[in-house]
Image (cartoon, rainbow, N blue to C red):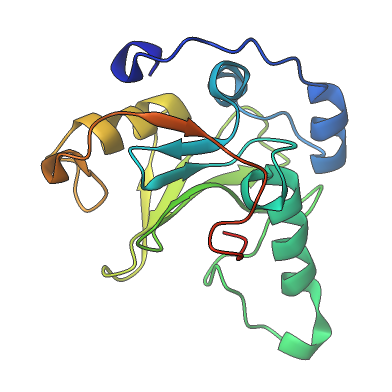
Length: 178
């Protein structure tokens, strides 16, 4: 990803123990490396990568807490924004969103507290029904989105948007969290 984007790694220091303690599971090692190199922000002006402490728009934990709160709100009964899955709750099984696009595509890990270290990616496109499962690393999935025009329905290389990265400003996009 560094070579693809021409990015100079930031070397961000993160208290992963605190973050993983709140989640109750370790996060994928390659995700942590990506975050330490890039921080949260936007790839190719359209792929949002969640990190930590860049404001609510790019904050993985803030987004997860909001999703979990909505999933656990009794007013919504059994309705979930991640249907047929639930948002991951500590000790359980469910989704944690780590990325999205300006076209409303979503990228999540399917986390199972009983299988730490196993992080299949579930992705949903705004114009294709259902979730797609990918048994690959976060970095490989992100690379394929940006560089592989044949990685459908998620590849954006055919749009010739370049392979850039813009750090998160800490402000929500257009005044709205992602």
